[in-house]
Length: 92
View 1 (cartoon, one colour):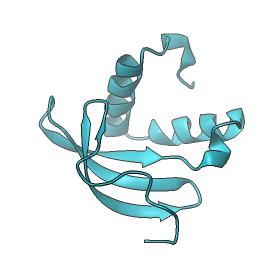
View 2: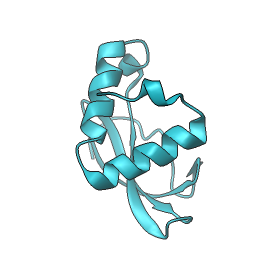
View 3: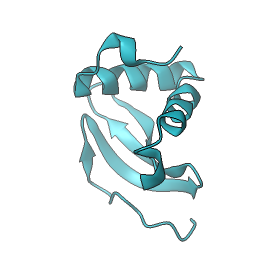
View 4: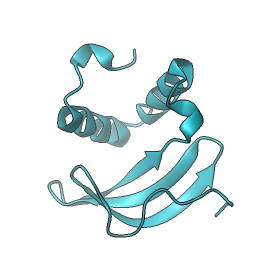
């Protein structure tokens, strides 16, 4: 793990996901293994660094990278539905 502060702790719930462990950290944030109890599977949850919050380009890049894999697409859909984002907000 890098020297980045861990924004979540084991057992923290993020929507439908329960954080199991930190699995990596770098310039684009910290990645955690989490459990989706509704779908009975593990997923990756990435917490972006504060610099991404006010930067639309960086947020869109993170979304595009998340959508690369089919599994990630499913997680994005569930997260989007949980957070109530409009369907027009997803990247192309």
